[in-house]
Structure formats: structure tokens, C-alpha cells
Length: 232
Image (cartoon, rainbow, N blue to C red; front, side, top):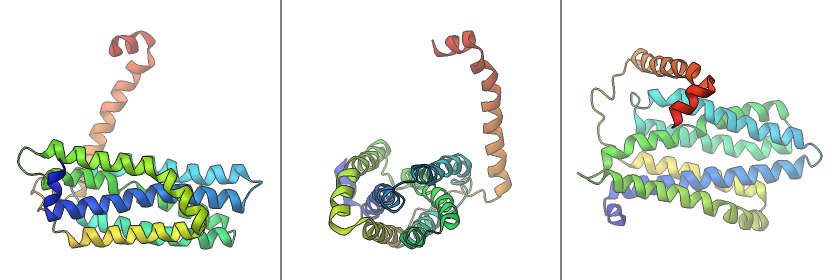
């Protein structure tokens, strides 16, 4: 599995993932700490801000998924990481100035931008895999993502105690910019004509067809007997 990193392109994409995954995870803990320290008696405000980001991350993952096979993945990864860097840079400034309306807007934009890199990267990985090594490549990146998520809370605690939450957010912003630069330096394999069926109308048609399948399944799931039959 690790010998896949001998390929310079895979190694760069892997480095980009490390920067993006650590930046996202560290940013969450640093932002949570900064908000609780700034608004110690307003737990509802803090919770609502954090949940706003999570909600839009989930909704936009569902929305953007069908389009990722039709858009240029390299451009998506570069632009989304650049946006994450700029938005993360703005967080300490808005928190310090108690700009709550802009903070809510920023959390929406952060959720949207955070929802894009991972599915775009997963969609691009098979095109980098040598013949018969796609599963090993997916395992390598999945393990890296999981390890970054496990290490992030410990690393965040150490960095916050040493540098302060605001400075950790600036460090996160730098990690996103590094990730964007790494992806920009990689020449992605060309997408097939089918993948780049550039008509956005076609991507939207695929999305509505998937939604129709879900709607057909809902009545079945609402009936306990049918649900049990479906499960067992």
C-alpha cells in the first residue's frame, strides 16, 4: 500500500489530503474553544453557530455529489481549499468584533466549502490508481483521513495551549492554502467524455432520479412490518 507513494502525483495528492484533513479537524476544535472563551455565558449561540456549519456541510454534500463527476476535480479542490483558507482567516476577526450576523453567514459558507474537497478527492482517486491497485489506494487515503481525525483533538489541545485558539485558526488557514497549492501543482488525469458530460442539466437529471428512488423507498420504511422485512 505504502509503495503507491513512490508515484509523485499520488504523493502530492496524499499530502494535499493530510493538509486538508488536519486543517478541517483542527479548525473545528480551535473555533469551538474560541467561541466558548469569547461567549462563555451564551452556550446556545455557540452551539447554534457550530451546528449551522455542520448542517450545511451535510446538505451540500448531498447536493454537490452528483455534479462532481461533471466538473473539473482539480479546479474544485484548488478553489474549495482556497475558499476554506480565506474563510478561516476571517473567523478570529469576526469573533473578536462580535459580528454575529456575519459569523452565521461565515458558518454557512464554511459548511458549503468544507463539503466539497473530500467527495471530489474520492471521485478523482481511481484515475490515479495503477492497474489493479484502486482498493489499496482507497485504503491508503481512508487510513490517512481516519488517522488525521484521531490525532486532531490531541494536536489541537497542544497547539491551543501553546499558541491560543486564534493563532491555531491562522495556522489552519495556512494548511488550506498549502493544500490548494499542492493540488494546483498536480496534473490530474484527463476525465473521460462521459465524466465531463458538461451539461449541468444532465447532472441535475441524475440527482432528481436519485431523489425519486429515495421517495419511493420512504413509504416502505414508514411501515414497521415492511421495514422489518426490508432489514431481515
